[in-house]
Image 1 (cartoon, rainbow over the protein chains, first blue to last red):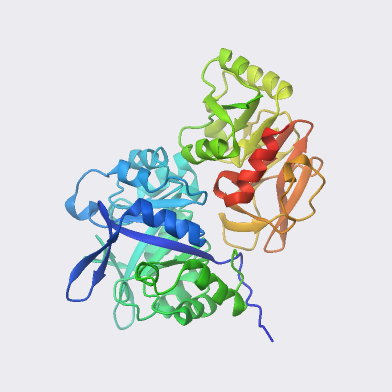
Image 2: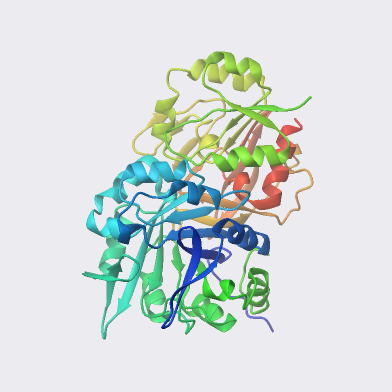
Length: 258
Length: 199
């Protein structure tokens, strides 16, 4: 008997590229960042494998406080006929518009949204809410989760759920939640975090960080009920292809775009 | 004859590269409609749309008559906001008049599910239309919107989002509109564009 798990839509499986231009990278414990490959080749590869969306995050943009490298972002958007989300160092409404002019459908903002929440509202007015995605990095403490910025480096003392509610009120279209503790570790998602977030906000939720196995992905979908799951390490190390992940989820009763 | 599509840009911000690539993939050439003379160079009109209704209509308010005339003469496809502004009126950020070549008002979707409606969804209640040639009944398309057009006279498909059925595509003569994004819907999206190009 297959139990059909009811979710709002087909759950989207998103391929996530963390980029230290010009390479896609992934952190390895005790080693730092490992080079995985070329963003354009990888986005094409994952698109061909059946990715529902591609997510490109420049992980050093904020840290280096430099200009956004639009041509790199544009290059990785070529020939993929699914939505393309990109972020890293986004600060102003002009950045949002520039992104949209460089092949990006959805612009992801993290650090600068917390510093200047009004930019969310302004960006929504010009670009529409569906183009504005806020990335929340959460670090778990005993009884709460704290927002971190700059790719999980800098604490803010801001409570993750209070911030999420504010983000929703400001009109953002989607939230990506990643776990500072689990990212890159392949030890699974922070299910409690996703579960609470999914109940709290009424805008689509993307769960990122931590997938180490097919079961991890199934578990976060069933228990956390996000609208989408972003996968990085599992894909980059060729553990599974997107079609293998989707076939597995489908066989477990979860509706995905096959 | 090779299709030359005129892209009519509305509003200030939107990703047009996918539209360009999708049109090329589907076998068309394109230009951007900037001056009135550009309408003479094209045989089809495509209206993409990201942004708000008000912003979109503001950006074309000086050219509405010309646009209306040409939509009536050449096959036209409106995508997402591009479909919504073909109607009579929109209620996003206040009230704005639309292009008015079809009936219908655009309002925020009232649904118990998360908004915006983002992701893959299917078409139901599909009517016979050349727009759907070679596209299977259970094909899914990518949606990214919070508003809907309530024209139930010209619809050629509906879509179900958490028990709320809304109009996902329309056809009135040679005027077509899709709420979803064919340029972001893989091969069936490209096929839909090919079908439009064959009109």
